[in-house]
Structure formats: structure tokens, C-alpha cells
Length: 195
Image (cartoon, rainbow, N blue to C red):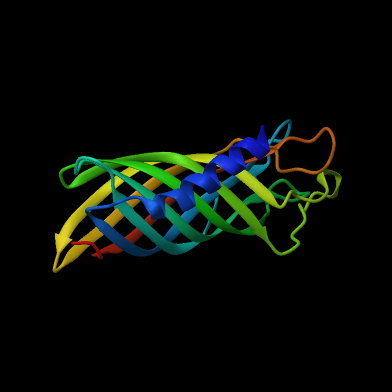
């Protein structure tokens, strides 16, 4: 199932570039991720802040209301967690190269979007609680959100807010269940490339 999801997302990502688009925009963007790792049977995890930045390509499909938006993003996920005393917290960071492919529905200045996302772990970070062991190199999930696209100059100023819901168990330890969650807020500028 995981291989099918991975293949489908990659195919959508690269297939988007072959569309005969009447409108094409490139969107450099950056912002903040508020992330958490959900661990089954453990209640010490808390949300932590991190950086997200990348570039999106927005491609109109059919009417002006629909578009496909593949992206390449660097994102910092992880969590804050309580250490032994139950009061002090520490942070655990995981860096990912994330490849979401979103279907976007435009509502004038506002829009909503949703789609699958594959995240490739960068580096060899291990989970700080030893009994959960190493983390898998790939995470798969869904993103849902919306935002504003405000005309400024020749392009549009973009404010985007999304919820990320990890669908994979990213723990390599048998019996453990660890999944990612997060809220991503970015700003960017959409530069038209098409006619």
C-alpha cells in the first residue's frame, strides 16, 4: 500500500509539469511549521515550532477555478517532550524534503487545497526515547488547508495555512506507533510564467 501511495504521488508531481496550462505561476515561499509526533500510548509530547521554505508551481487545469500545485519544500518537524522530571521540556527535530501535490480550488481572493505529500528524511536522526529506535526514511500523509491570493504588482501575495496529517507509522521499532502531525503557515509571492 505504501509503495502504491508513493508511486501515485510521484507520478502526480511529475505529471503536473506536462499539463497544457494556460496559466502557470512559480511561488517561492517560507514560513513556520508547528509540529508534533503522535506516539501511541505516550502523552508527554507537545507541539514545537520549526522552519519551512520551498517553491511551488501552480498550474491551471480546465477552468480558472481549479489548479494543480506540486511543491518542493524543506521542512522541520518533530516535537517538544517532557524529560524525566515531568516539568522540563526538550525538543526533537527531524528535517525533511517534502513533496506535496495539491488540488487547489479558487474562490476569488481565497482558495482551498488538499492533496498527498511524501517526505524524505534528511540525516540520521533517531528518536530520543531509546525504546522507539530509529525512524523510517519516508513519511506519507495528507495536507488540507487554504489561504489568500492578493494581487500585488504583476503577481499575487500568498498567505497559506495547512494541516498535515501523517498516515504512516514512521517508527522502525516493532510494536511502536509514531505518526506526524502539524500546522504549516507560509507566505509567498506568485510570479506568472504563462501567457
